[in-house]
Length: 172
Image 1 (spheres, one colour):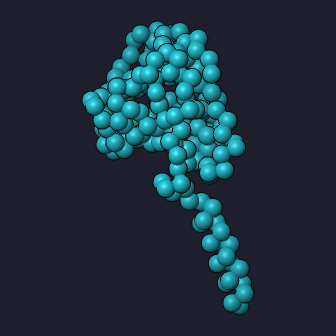
Image 2 (cartoon, rainbow, N blue to C red; image 1 turned 60 degrees about the vertical axis):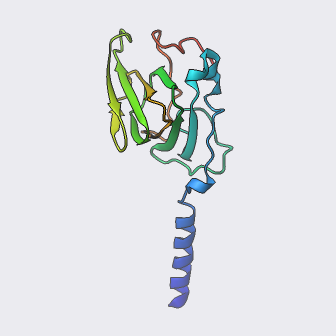
């Protein structure tokens, strides 16, 4: 009987070890969105990947990421004075949960991105943005923001930049 327990325990040990992504093993990847800085340093953002690649591209060579099954989970580092430009995820909802700093989140009209509604969120505040709704964000004040980002698909499509986005026409 103890053999069955030992085997089960070993399998459980392997399962739990393969399911942990510790902060100490993460890196802040400022290169994945570096192409956006073609439009200025205010677009500098970093991604800390935990589960899946998010919608920032193919990171399948990063063995540090837990494989996504149904959603992606990362942290965004948004330096003080920086913005996440207006963009749209056509296929998935996106959730932002503020861990540090203050951030203004905006949702834009699909037809006329100049029409928008904005709210300032801080520590432990959350916003969910439905698929197909353009969104943008920016830090408030002089503190960097760290935002937990959850995207509702194993491999979301790369977002696009509507005509009203400062990134419209910018390529990777």
